[in-house]
Image 1 (cartoon, one colour):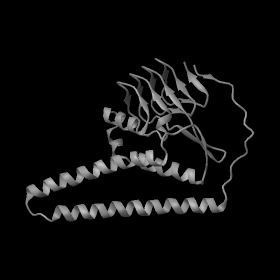
Image 2 (cartoon, helix red, strand yellow):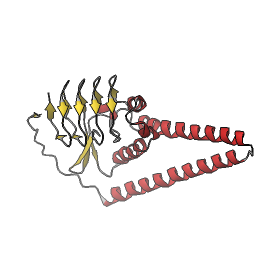
Image 3 (cartoon, helix red, strand yellow):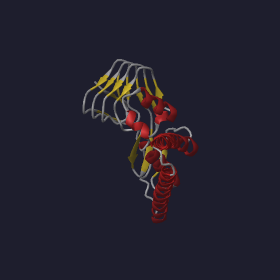
Image 4 (cartoon, rainbow, N blue to C red):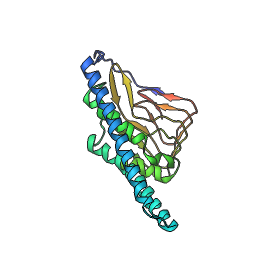
Length: 223
């Protein structure tokens, strides 16, 4: 059974962004989509041109393989690099929505959620991807959820734990006009069922289980 810690009262007001902040953040988001899609399109056009320059079947195959491998490597490494360059290590904090900090949060979120490594959910390669993002993932952990933790530095999973599909351990929540980041801790040999939600500050102890379609709210723990 989950145990709730005593809630800490907060007298902080709700953050309401100005119209200028709202418009500036939206403009930056639109600019990112335009620049990213343009760069991706140019890369595909250049790759197609390079592959089509040869006319032998063997060369076409080898060039196609080389180009596809280069694109996969680039699209895999770029989000990881962007995360470390823009954020570094995530810490527990409150980010005003529509601020510059929120734009960085949103950009990193979009990048790591579209990483091709998501195709390897349930495999050791996916665990390596999360470790490269900063998550502390133990040995023999099986993660079947394709929802990538947005604040991986705040995620800790012990050895031998199983995370079933559609589980949410994103490491943040939106409240009162802020994005609040926080830790999610799961012990060794634990089990997290399908379609579960672990809010920031939630924890599951060694050998504990959280049933399907369950949730742990902030401050709750399964010992």
